[in-house]
Length: 504
Image 1 (cartoon, helix red, strand yellow):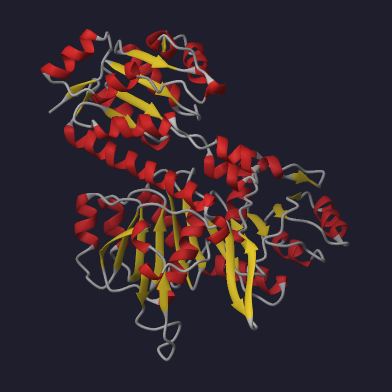
Image 2 (cartoon, one colour):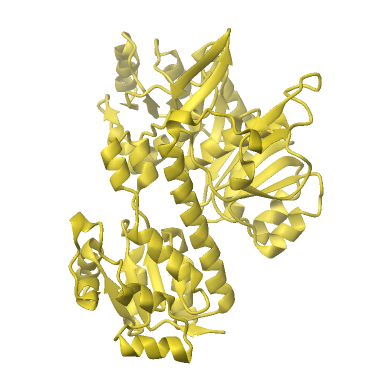
């Protein structure tokens, strides 16, 4: 059954990418209901709106905690388009709502930024999550968009289908909305129970085939079914779980980026790339080290389509993780029964990390810091270009998740070479250069990221000879000036972040 979009409720925290959707809705004469900052944004586009408070007869109250929680909003969303429900809408003067575009307050981002407990609690969304669930429940009659990543598909419905959605499309949007909802709730409960996050839940004990080696017994305590649906493949091993955790930690860095693929081996990324589609991201990630990719752990931040699946299927891998698979991609990738296919449902980085050592356990805060351009302090006369800044951020995300000492070389949002787990930073740098050149990359115009400071300018000297002119590092050495001086003398740019990312 197809449904025509005639009315929409839009209330979002992030506005980027929303303008095209709004303009397409306006062209098709769709009535738009909205609130607060979203209203201001839409009206700035020259598009008229109907304020939710004008619909409900109530203003936003309690500092914005209650805006949309009203029968005139939820009645319009939850009403089935049958005679009885439509008669009740008419009786109580409630307009039906065919499209709901809502995102959620940035709870995880506030936690990651080190917000106070009060700030974090205030970012627990009530109205937004209720709107999403209501629209997702009524997918027979309502389109729900719970993430900006779905704007492109919505625009295709508005333009190519003249706002007429199919049951298949609405059901898929609904499933994605409940994924957003469950992931959000999981993040909140993990935060609220962080003080006892190390307690082992015996009800979720999974005995493993063996541990890191066949002579070691092992088991896993935790509800892994809340994180994945295992679509095919053998039982997960100890080493699989360790690598999967590393893959999830890494891909979280790219959750708001374009299609990104990562290939890991022994918890270290040997290939990472961001591209305009999944297939190109896979090609670029694989090109970084096609040898190490054999038997690796593969992970993507977006759904796998058939084109990408046909490429991936050509190599041997242990585990492939993605938030979704098209039907034909799943059928192809499931044909080889021993390879593990995991559909990611939700994942939240634990705020505490635990490790047994000596005769006890050491506990530390998780490394939740991810530096972006706004954190950079330029230390040289030369300033990085816009492209170099983008690549420096990309390289830092990779370096953070590689074993120390580590050096990352990247260009055009692609890992070109890395050296990790080395006993000297110079060794790591030389190894990164060697790997990049071995697989045919031209390092001219690439950037370098280091997980810790340079005590001497030797690494900067090495990459300069290869045509690399942009470097990011935390700084903090008493001899920082030596590296800065070398950069200034050779027209290079260097930025400091002030944050070290050792990973042992």
